Image (tube, rainbow, N blue to C red; front, side, top):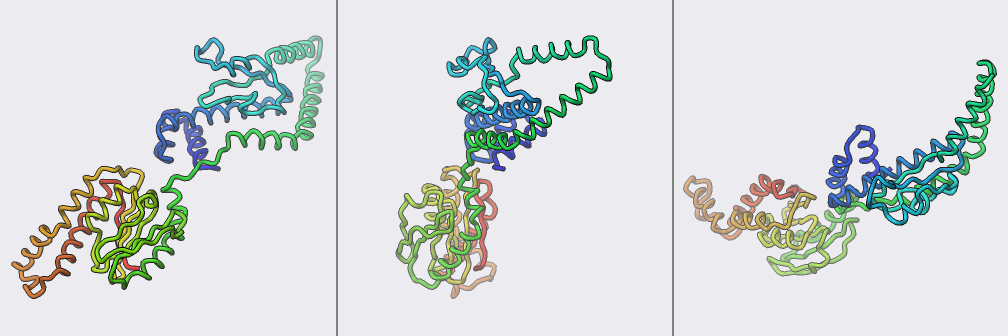
Length: 353
């Protein structure tokens, strides 16, 4: 069962309103509320009418009547209005052709033909007239046996009908980029490990773009402290690059990742440490995240941290060099991301390969 239908089924079983089910679908699949409501209303109508058809068939009927909204609504479409009151064979029911839903947001329905119901009632009245209870029970048992026999002979045809009808509405819901990433996470991690291991001892940066199936789609060589991969390939994909001098992400790393809509940003160091910033569905293209990070990892801030530790005697003047500034800036960046990444819709992790 598709994830979309699981949401609808749970909603129906728990009595959730259309608005609640639509909100759940909007959140789960990252679609707009209009599309979510369209899915809920159309799929619900489909399920209701399929249940009606099955009930009629199980009861021995071979025809159904198409009922549009008629006088209950002013916006009945021409297609549904033309079908209103028409009869069709249950075996020939085809969603979108002669059986609702005919289109998104369709609210039409199928029902047992009215004169058929009247004929049944007349048969019952005639059967009851001048008949004993024992005779009625015998006739009812005979009718039930006949209905069961009809149902047995039509089972194979029913399975064909159901597969044909469900095929129209049973569209496979496309995975969101986040679900596809999770589905292929193991393959992606294997590729990341191989790529980052190969590049860890280089003295210049190399950027690698990996798609959401774990396949490398681009490798770009750079300079000692920068690399510029093709932006069009970064969207919703994974980008990893090595930091020859070590350390966490730079301001440009995060700023460009937000602008280029990178799904996961990675950086690896010669020490075997990796940093990961994974975008979630809650992330936006607001650059406030990057601008705040820029202040934290600036050399000005690193200088303040170093000066403070010099005063405390934690380090000496002989320890101060470019590598120390990178270390302090990286430490400040790690701390900031651990505390604030989630607020901006990202997941920050670091570890050792």
